[in-house]
Amino acid sequence: MLETIRFRRAVWAGLFSLILNVAACDAIKAGATDASTQADLDNVDAMSREHADDTSEPSAAAEIAPARAVESETLPYADVDDELAYGYLAYPSGVLEPLPAIMMIHEWWGLNDNIRAMANRFAAEGYMVLAVDLYGGETATTPAEARRQMLRVVENPGVARENIRQALDFLKVTEAPAIASLGWCFGGGWSLNTAMLYPEDVDASVIYYGQVTDDAEKLHSIDGPILGLFGADDRGIPVKDVKAFEAALKRLRKNHEIHIYPGVGHAFANPTGTNYNEAAAESAWQRTIDFLAENLKSADET
Image (cartoon, rainbow, N blue to C red):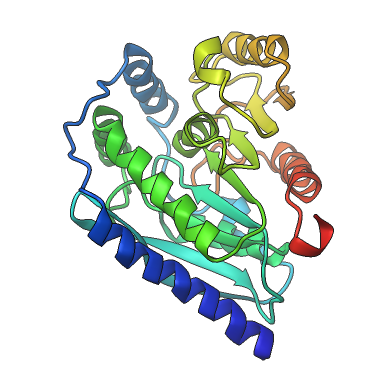
């Protein structure tokens, strides 16, 4: 009980830090500096094609029960452009603080119940998990709605970057000894972006079939190890792009592990939709758990 109280005090310290951050920082404007690149816009089109006949219904991934009891709550973790961002925080019951943390980024449907279910699964593995919201509290149930939300983020990347920066600050204030970014699809691309934008704050990153790049200038800043999980038949994230990404990481001598699963397409491990492939998803899950265990250390292990 004492450990749980101490842990919750750390969480509230994160909330207090958010209040101070709001008072100290100017809001990020939606039309701020960085314009959308053609590659980002092309990725929106690619995801729209991949998910054209897809749904937001839970896949088998979201129906797997956590390995142990977890506690969770919805709370504000950031204030961006005068709007509070609410995320989903999950952690194992009876936790001994501090815990290594995962900043989880939703796929293109948004922060829905299926993403919360995945957060619970990761929390049950011994992590504090903050599932962030880059869609401003909205979730999509049709491909057209998801495209609109994803395009809104692509057209205003500064808002998403500030959202993620404050999420990382929140986790640091809770005394997480190490932090990983992790995401699927849209969120997989933003997991890589997080590693490139905030290398001093991110100790490891997991990319499930997200948008990648072979731009050495962008990749040069990455400091932590990268785990990339992709489908060989993914038309939205082509294998040639994945191999170019892998080759660039190798040239830059970045710590990386890339796996391309034969016979599966985009979203093979998504907690939503019709593209789930059980064998590939289970393999990717185990690789993810092993990768996180190796690269996120609790306080008594560092």
